[in-house]
Length: 198
Image: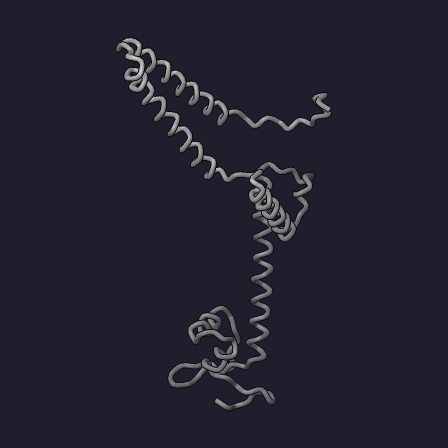
């Protein structure tokens, strides 16, 4: 298609306008459905005709509108998140834009990664794995202890039962201590000056 409309700008077909925007012809059809301007309506053997300048203007406006809608949605999400988390607007973080919140989150991530490299911060799953291993060894040792004591010291059946009961008590105490620590709120960090330690 080599016709020109209103001066030097040529009228382009679907394939040509798709090539300029680096998209498929199907995408051009979708964009047409969303309002991309068409100079010549195609159909029944007639090719669609597009002016690049009109299509580019529509594309830029669509991108700007989509960006504005995304910003509005991001702002809404941030506000609802603050409300859900109970963050007061007076909180220092409350006035941050989504971009500033992202920067703050990235800074916190870098700090946590550095702390993790120093081994002053341990991942929960690593700790759970370590505790599973340690307590597995403790349980195995306590379970095998009565048999070992019976063989080494010729304990009576009654004495072995007492050792088993004692070991069960140790395991129960460990379980209670773990549950209490997991359910207890973390203590507030107290300044050593306030406690009279310094």
